[in-house]
Length: 398
Image (cartoon, rainbow, N blue to C red; front, side):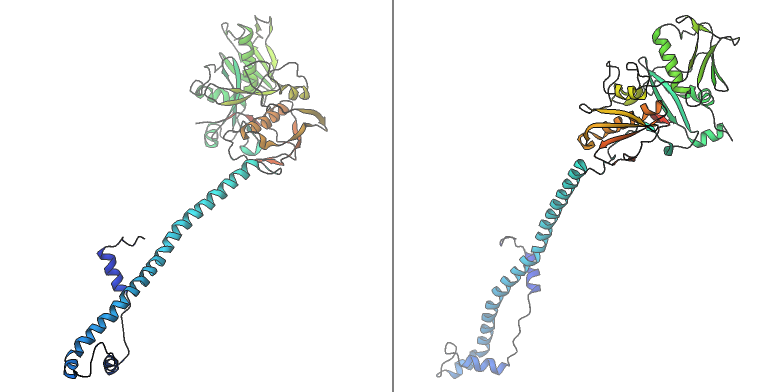
């Protein structure tokens, strides 16, 4: 505090806090001391001295006080400096503490970013593209193939359990029952997709077969694109619990599509590599997309490394390569170089792992990664086969 930073309140406070002056000597002792002081008394003026003794005592007292006050002021100033010093130290200490905390925070952040070879966090992952068995209640998923610019995007609605219990009391609805009950409520355009569903005609089921009854002007065989959208959307919607699809007319007779000239029947199965489809607003969906001849799971996994057009993008980061081998029913995918997952953005790693999982699942298999530095990635234990997804691109039903 500067010496000139004083006001009446501070001075009054200081004076009140000063210790009281005291003198344990008796009055006679003080008088005797003063008598001995040649400056105050002379031998020839006893009457003069007696007359001025009380005044001299007062002067002496003031003199003593004048000596004590500066000393005490300095002492109290020092005390004030000392007492104010902790505040300064507290301020400085706070800054130091904040500095230390900031430094520790920065070190912690740096540690999280770099991480060691044993683990890798999913903290910043905002979107998972798969549903694994532990994430849902059995029978509460509604898969459907939505359309965006002639590309089928498989999504899985996570249905409220209470709603399904009320709508299907005592039973677990099939994909056909879910479709017929809820498809009209799917907000396709609001979600950013094309207006495509429901299918024209009626959808029913018989044993393991889906039956689509169509009218004469259905237009599903209008072109190769419309036919591809039709078949792929059906596969994405009904393949979880059925294996065949059949098109019939209003009398129940098989219908031949003009474009192919054959009765329209196909298996509800789509095996192949997964890529990512990026919407204009930045949303990412993982989609199966044919890329060459991929009859085997090994061929499909290797095909994921390079997209053949600009409709989809690879989920494999640039520079990452691997080999594939099937051992005892499990796919062993081994990276050529020891893979440090912390080199990549977390979402990139997530898309790659889940793309592998979905591709393997399309062949009804699981995949295990080899030559990865980390043992864990979020909830995924990389020392074991990755879980088999039961849904893709989850969306909460509202």
